[in-house]
Length: 101
Image 1 (cartoon, rainbow, N blue to C red):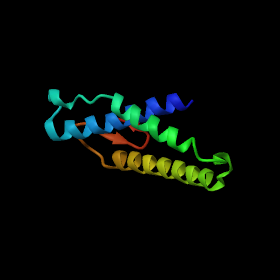
Image 2 (image 1 turned 60 degrees about the horizontal axis):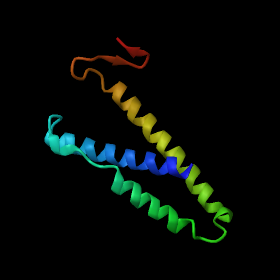
Image 3 (image 1 turned 90 degrees about the horizontal axis):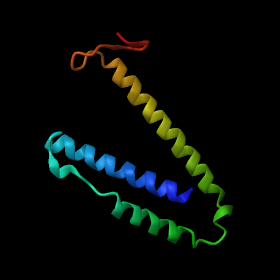
């Protein structure tokens, strides 16, 4: 599971970095290629350090923090989705709350 999380986290960070590069340089920019490998190594090292904490499974505050972060992430995504739909006509595409017209 941790290998899957490490790969997923590194892919997500690279996607954000590429998106920022595309916004700055344009979609035709060749220099927006970013490797996943350094981020996988960083996340792997962080996991190795965290795995050395004794009684890590007894940290109840960690579960509460994870739940709060999960709800916050969901609320942010929902808010951005509603804002996009409510924004109306963008680039010739009209949207409504019930679907694309």
